[in-house]
Image (tube, rainbow, N blue to C red; front, side, top):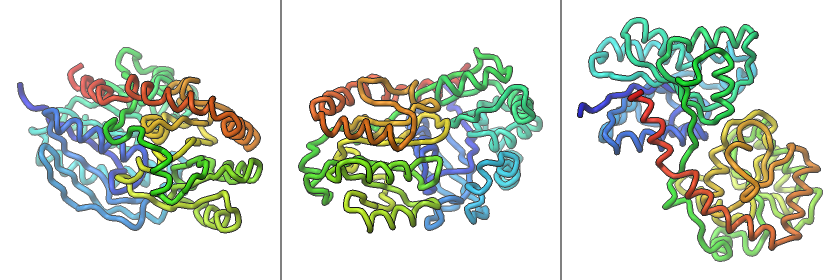
Length: 382
């Protein structure tokens, strides 16, 4: 059987830090170890400023092309203005992807853009090179079919062969634009269940330096929509023996996290933690918190936490309710009062917390295994 060769186009790639970057890395690893050849066109990190990857990286069945593009936190500044982010992200990806296809179009079987900025590039490439094009959508957009933005997105995607979405909610909003539902596949993320697994929480806490503290963990960018400040306020409303640890390396609220950690004994600022060490913190944590204020798609961090045996108190917005159930989580409106109430309840009722912790591993094995990656790869053959 001929080896399929896939061109993936995406603005963000490791060592840039984020959930989409980790999903991409896991997916590429799955593909290249299962008989696919991947060409990856991307940028050098544009939101994580203190790291840089190789401009050209080669592994078995994989070639990564990382191109310079100005950062200056422009992506986050433009997040609320989709048109500006399109103009910001598209030009460099298009230039390099077009040059690549001019030289290599006979090698490429499938063009696989991630996100709508990359979809612009892929749509133009499809006109010139007539390749099968499959779009990956890993965010929720809340666009209306009747809005100008919704109409532009439909025009952009209407000729794609297939679309893959990270949740059923994302699938529904794409179908609502008019794209045929039978040409949309939704999937669940997966994690390395050999690394993300429960261990002895008590002994690991001591190794990390948390002693016997009760820990509620936050992992994410320090930006307002992620809701870290909700947990900062929650920390002041609950028993001071409940400690809140923040793992975050970027965002405008970093200085706020540092300040609050200095002034409050039950707030711990961990800064950035390398991804290959992150599982240790999930494993040592009593509870994981996701206080997102926006329609978030499936948060990868919560999947990793649950695989490590750590239940979740999370916002009930976006696609989170579709990925979890009450056996491993408590989902609430993201307010200080709600998070304080539920975290306090679990702290005061350790038997309830223990029940949730015991359910986590089984839930992860049933829902977050690598077979989910094959559901995406199967779309290449549809």
